[in-house]
Length: 313
Image (tube, rainbow, N blue to C red):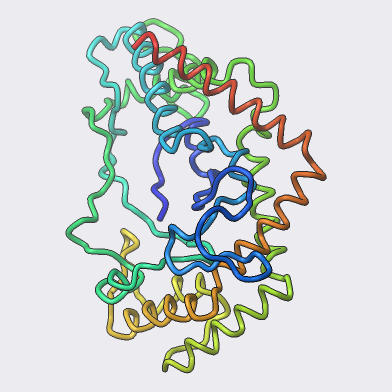
C-alpha cells in the first residue's frame, strides 16, 4: 500500500521510492533454497534482499523519508515564522482539504503471504484500522499557503508588504536539504526507474513466465478466475475498492486471495521472481555502476544535510 502525501521535492522522492522487502548484496541469506539456489519463499520473511536496495534512499534507515519530511517541515516552519506568521505549525493542513486517503494502488509479484489476513480481508484490510493520514497542525490560511508554496503555482507575489519567495518556504526548505547534490533527478529517479525496467524484463523471462503459468492454473484449479500474475488478482475491479482503496471483501475475493497465497507457496512463485529479478539487477549494476554510485552519493549528501538540520531542532 502507498500513502500519497507531502509536497515539493519530498513528495517526488516519496512517490518514486521502491517499496520492496529487499536489502544489501542480493544473495540469498538464511532460509531454505532449492538445489540451484532459488530461495523457498512461503512467508514475507523468507524473501532475501534484492541488489538494488543498497542504492535506495532507505537502505540504511527504513524511516529515511519520514526523517526527511521532519527536516523539511522544520525548515519550512522557520521560514514562515521569519516571514511574519509567528504561530505557523510544523505540520500544517492545506486550506480547504480534509484527510488524505490511503490508496492501495499495486503490489509486486511477491504480493502478500498472510493467509489469516486473506481469509478475513481478502485484498483489503480491517476498515476499523484504516485511519486517514492527516497533518497534525492547524489548517493554513489562504494567505499562508501562498507563502508556503510560493507564487509559481498562483497566489499573490506580495503579502504583508513583502515579496513572496517564488518557490515558497517549502521550496526554500528543499534547496537547503538538497544542497550539494549534483544531479537531483538521478538521485531520486534513477534507481526506481531502472528497477521498473528490470521488473518488466524479469516478467518476460521464460522462468518467470513458466512459474506464473503454473500459479495461474493453480488458482483456476481451486475454482477461481484466471489471472496473469498475483498483481492482476490484487487489482481486479470486481473487488469494488472504495475511495480509500479498501475492497468489498466478498466471499469470492477472500477465496481468491487465499488461493493466490496457497498457489504462490505451492509453486514458489515469489522465490523464482526474486531469483530472476536479482540476477537482472546484479547485471544492471555491473553495467551502470557509475550511475548507481552517483545516485547513492546524492542520497548520502541528502542524509548529511538532514542530520545537520535536525541537529538544530
